[in-house]
Length: 105
Image 1 (tube, one colour):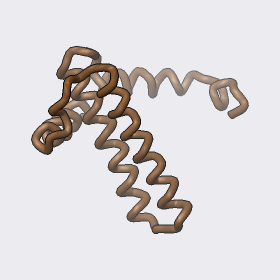
Image 2 (tube, one colour):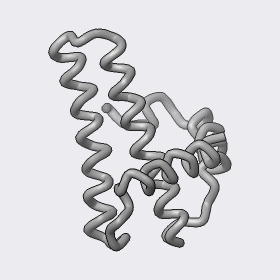
Image 3 (cartoon, helix red, strand yellow):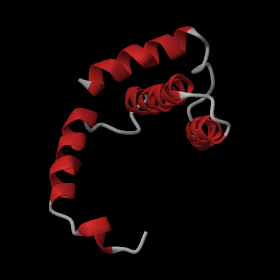
């Protein structure tokens, strides 16, 4: 499900020139910050009352960048686990956790 979608999104990112750099710590950090910037754009869309469609578009960008980064790291041998399998494992684990996972916020 997500594994296949991530591969497709990553291929598009490669074709559009987003992976023409050495995949090192600096590149990884920059890619993470691009995800953070998309989160900020969601907040700005809500804060500036830009409407539901704009908010959802920004959430889509978060997902696209996140899945692209995961697929790229997997392709370059930094990670080997299936996102689909890990998501299911985490989903089941979170069902067993206490309210707010035992913290105040």
